[in-house]
Length: 296
Image 1 (cartoon, helix red, strand yellow):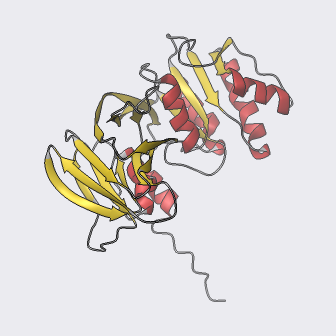
Image 2 (cartoon, helix red, strand yellow):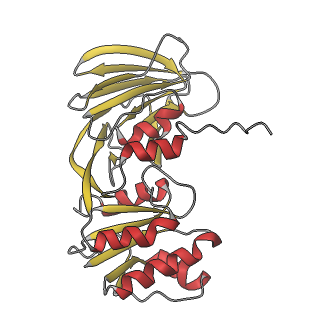
């Protein structure tokens, strides 16, 4: 088995866990390739040097026969990992080095067990939809795809922006708001959730359109099929607005219209057989947990 490892950095509390990850992989004779800046971070800050097969710096020198990728960090690191591998068909496992996330949901106390499951083939692959964003002129030209969401919002702290939204050429609404989020089912538990959007299970085949602080309180999030083509026309007094695709952002002129559609490929996520989306929801959102202290 050949595994690539991507990461940026982590805190002291994860030092023992990262050592055990490499120890476990080496013991099972796994060929390891690691993101060069992450290897340098480990070598310069920890008490050991990982035993590896080689390093990579980006999409071009990532070994194409890699069986799977470990993303070590948080959900933001996972999104950066997706943009690094781009369309290369490699399943990703998110290992969390801090607080438990929705993408990087394997906690450090579960790492050894999960690695055993992966080596034994005790896992499934989930297919996650991405969005593709077009603009005139081209935007996010290096990788115009997002796993979580596209967000358009005002560039400064002055007046709201207005956003005309069309679904398959049919006019939906003009949103007077601080911004608008177009999210995938994966992104429904990210920024969209924080502005009141619904939680959507992976594989639901839809997009969520959720306004940020709308002027009209009757304007609510809406769910549309993911085979829809969504067009946005933004107006702003500053003649510019901010567009964010996952963790990347660009300042765009209001003369540029945006088109959003489903990408022609999907991200593969590794899911151990004893973990599911609904369990993660309960654990993350503390559903059913009564925190009230008992009377003495």
